[in-house]
Length: 253
Length: 181
Image (cartoon, rainbow over all chains, first blue to last red):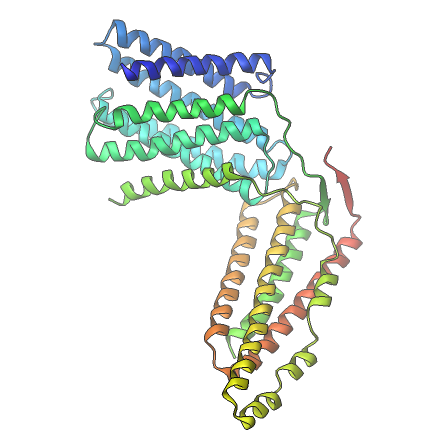
């Protein structure tokens, strides 16, 4: 009964975020994210119907729609990348190359896993596949978070909320699926309810972060000391080199 | 087994990083820091000859001649404190150089991942060296403190001259300062 309540609460929150997105004009700002959320809402409803009306086909519906959600989830990561690094073309290019590499790995891994087993829809195989895909998503998110942190990229409350919500959900999923795959437990014990609760928390975070449109804070001033990137790097490395020489003397008396 | 821990590690690392990101993003201080870092350093660092005077063997010999344990302890404590202060400042200056680089580099069109990784590794190596020096300053024999101090002073001086060079380069190239809005 509790799981059904969580389920309905999830659908309600998804619809609420979509409605608020329409009213606050966030659809045009984050189209990828809202596309993901709309598809997840449809998936949740179809699962709910299958669970209540056709329990025999529910596992089939679950794993198929889960794969769709996973692939569409990649759109959220691209959205974070696209919006977050809009003002920083060099950093964006660097992150884009990295993400392209990561996503090439996603699909090759998916194809390999699909071709590998005879029981493509078997719960454990599907769970392994999902863990692998979530792992790659986690890798992509890690790369983005590190880029944001290292280059001090200012994020709007909306984008930060999207990143935090989805990132926390992905990280929790990776840990949970890893433990489940290792123990061979499928939909049992504490894990049965943990994931829906985690998903619900993510939705709550999104409701708060996406209630209204927030402009991304921009750096007050962008100071460009060197027009040429190579010149900038040379200058920085020269200063480091000087320090290294002095420190080298110190550690070799 | 390795894959199991690797998966857990990735998930946990992402969770922790996001937690810190959510806890509060460091304010973007691009442009807030004055460009005249070298001037600040010039006032903070001492010329090598002054450092030599401060850490001259005469002082050490005098303290040894007096033979008062309390004075010796005080002398050693003070010298160690100064050495540690210089190393810490060097470390801080390294961070400032890196921050300035990151702020300038992030807006560049031709940002290169490999180059950035090299710069970052160089920075990490230097921070590690500073850490080792800091430990050495804590455990080193008193007679070596003088050498350590002179090295620290020399290091600070070189950083300052490096900063001047950087500024000269900046002045040579037209500097663009614009507001983000």
